[in-house]
Image (cartoon, rainbow over all chains, first blue to last red; front, side):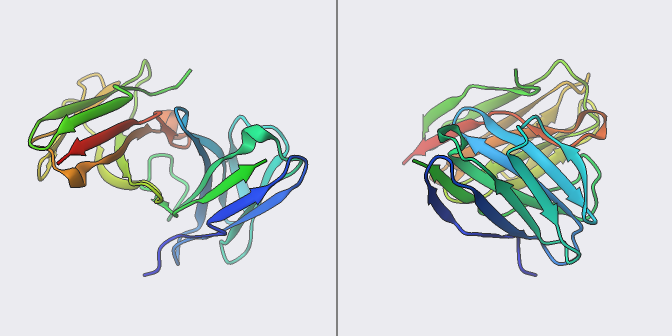
Length: 114
Length: 110
């Protein structure tokens, strides 16, 4: 069974641009969560989608948005990029949206904002 | 302020030594999870502890859940270079989405 696939692996953007990251979950998984990881801050929860609906949202500005398609694939968009948005963005999938369910992570997209 | 506080932040030891990583919170969790993340990869689940006072062993790794279900520890016996990585604890209070600690970076020198 294929794991969680995130594309692209690396991305370099400049301030003010926007970016779209993609995540394909494990087949059969309907929940996709997004996390931002920076050194010293750990993983900060961005949002979670289940069956195309956003179920939970973390404490991030409105520049961060996402969506989920009918095949469970998810995209995350960041508009008007700031230097502080440089981070590893991780996507995780799970069968359901139960809070303490096991998460399967992708390898992440490393975003650098110059 | 992190919901889950991990200590220490960094740990560097020689191969064969033992180490313990701590995960503490003021909140009660129905369960806590431990993940390990290697450079360039996403975190991988090691174990889930569910019952207060529970001890789980995974080869040389021993995980313990506190009696009050507010804290957990990970103990590695006779560490090996392959144990090097970022260890993360995670919990979901009130079944909200998982919150992660900031992690402990473990380096095992050969």
